[in-house]
Image (cartoon, rainbow, N blue to C red):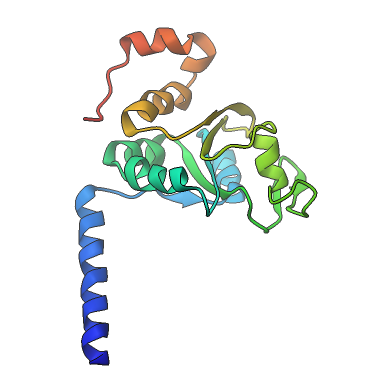
Length: 176
């Protein structure tokens, strides 16, 4: 009986792996320190997904948006994507400063507070330049079709030259 349960578990894991591989590539997630180091040697902007374990919309962003093959491809090729637990306990060094979660901000990590500019809501994605400078946080759940233009807009220098509303007028996405 125990053998059958183990066998079923292994088969379910194998089937889940096939489903993920059939959907396309997965997002390669980095720590913030890894992303900053990589951006120094091979410059690309940094995308941060600030999430919490209890956030249902964060889980939906993972399952519906980041699992989309178009979105995963953009994140993997045009950004260093960071998954950051906004209530995590690990200290983080960013821009020469150490950020901690010492309880002074409730459950919130100091880095999350800084990146989200004190506007704590989850999920929030944060766009940073290759030099780790804050471009903007964007809060709330986004579908693949909603986030695709944002990812393309902030991936290069378009955001410095053109208003987002103007960019949207000519943007043609790949998300179906």
